[in-house]
Amino acid sequence: MKKRHPLLEIKNVSKSFCKGSKQSIPVLEHINFEVYDNELVSLLGRSGSGKSTLIRMISGLIEPDFGSIVCNDLAVNGPCRDTSMVFQSFALFPWLTVFNNVAFGLQAAGLNREEIERRTMRMIDLIGLTEYVNAYPKELSGGMRQRVGFARALAVEPKLILLDEPFSALDVFTGQKLRQDLMELWEQHKIATRSMIMVTHSVEEAVMLSDRVCLLTSDPGTITDIFTIDIPRAERTRDNTQDWVDRIRDTLNEKIALTA
Image (cartoon, rainbow, N blue to C red):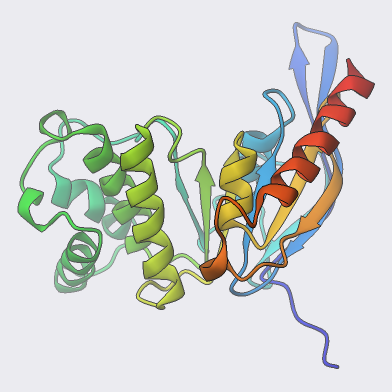
């Protein structure tokens, strides 16, 4: 059998931050994992386990102290052109319209005007924002603002999209609809994204969406367990995934108890 080639490969990555003038606090230590085409991998763990730091290193926004990160066969030594991120807090520019928020990354990439307009309007249509193209963020609901965030991230056609708790600031029904819409776009290949990494605190969300769930424990953050969810995503229900939810939650609680 031919060995699969990873889209993302992380080898022995560690990161510390300075506290005060002398003390260095390790946040992540010896992180190793890969992401392959057509995978959604979740990073699951309690606050302080380094999940958000890890995806910021993958995006190139933070540099690791040790180890290597390779995305789409290129070493990540700065902002990675093959990744894009969606944040929990929407992170929109309040002075820009929906169109200009979505177009921002394309403009920064130096594309010509016609290509920027084509890609921007296509993504606005796909994500369900056509009626709001000239609206400003303050005129939108939280769910619509996060749709703008997704459209902006997807418009640059990243190979790998990084999701930093993108649904946690939304109400249950809005978050569920946005998750469903995103997964349909991805699974039907209507977007260029090949794979996704999602940071979450929700075991249920991780199990329902992910191909694999990586469990991080803190002090410092380390991947201690990786769970492969063997139920086809289209067939997953709350009932038939409950065993996975219980197993992962029990493991997480055990790890927390050991580090408490």
